[in-house]
Length: 196
Length: 363
Image 1 (tube, each protein chain N blue to C red):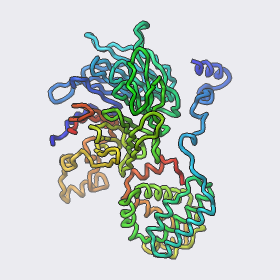
Image 2 (cartoon, rainbow over the protein chains, first blue to last red):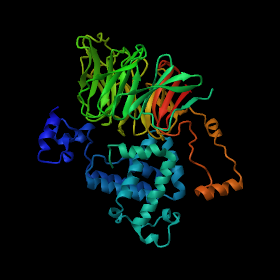
Image 3 (tube, each protein chain N blue to C red):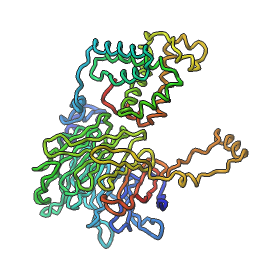
Image 4 (cartoon, rainbow over the protein chains, first blue to last red):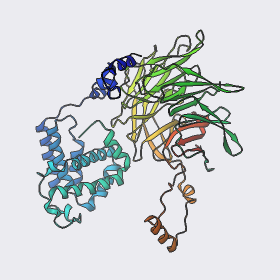
């Protein structure tokens, strides 16, 4: 009742269709902080995430690409600032770029079959979308020098466009993750409150 | 296994369906009215139409004992339809909500029903003899968003509700004079109205589409938009639950689920078919689809001649006719209900969906 009355008085001076009635309601959903709906994360330090990046790169240099990928994804800094998340995105992208196309599917299947593997692939999917959402911020990524690209069958000249090439790597990962983890994985990227 | 019984009622989404106790009457929410179908031979025939809402009807439920039908709609009203010799007579229920009513279910005792709504409240409605009127009491806290679904505990006091704030919650809906005091159990000991007995959120946190208590009422399952089902085993009042098991699947999200005994859940949704989950307190897993694909696809066996192929390419620009899904339902399943048996042991269950089909399956 009270809302109807308030709208009626407001409509004397205004077009009532444009009134946002939620603002008039003290209990309205627009009047509370949605971040209170779920538990908070422990903050992640920039040094911490750089350290993790070093470890991951070391694994990568040692030839353990799967371990590097797993390590990078399991250490996702949910509680970090935007800058921290950006650093980790670079780490993940580097790992993804250094894995050969022919190795992707078997590696994803191995990860998927392990305990908690489906969660790891969910995180990977989040990074793929984040990477695709902001290609320009990653132009600092190292020039592709690994075998991953030669197998992508990129169009001529694409190697010069580092963002275009990075995008095609992400797209090809995306396809393979969906093959292994299904469409549920894409849905979880959207619903999950643990943003990367 | 006998093939499922398929009834294609119309080319229009079915928001919800409900069978009467004798299975002779089927109520289907279609657009702004509820259609009542009567069993005639192998099929269903339109018998009656309940017109009373002026916006989309979102949910319908037939009380098994009394035969009363409750409906709710986006017009913010709920109607109780009383059977009488001259047809069903509607009574308006004062819900006192300022958003659409989304979901309604009778309590097992049939003396109350719960209406979920977009107004972030659940209206618990009961009949007040002295006023000869259905009145409602609101469960408000701590709901932060639209209630999409509710489900009753067998004791008719506890109510589970799923919401778009990604939480599944268990409330007490105890109403003095209507309910008898419930025995203390795993959900709590003292249960005054609006007690929050549990609040659950899984990690990937999709908005909740379906909730359901296990047959004993000692466990709660919910399906969310993150393509998961989560089963909660509580451990008494003010204690963390014994275990919360979340199964994320590779499939599309589930819209509705039922228990089949304490160790099995059947869920269906955007993948247009029903899936079976098995497990217990130590873990749950997806065991597979309830549909045998060969039989379903059999009807779609087309002539694969070269002529046909080029004809298809010419007509449609592709060689395969992929307008038919291989599943029985041709679109999202929105409701799944026990048809024969009880949720202790389901012999048959029924599903309805966006494709206007009602299908009765052998569990």
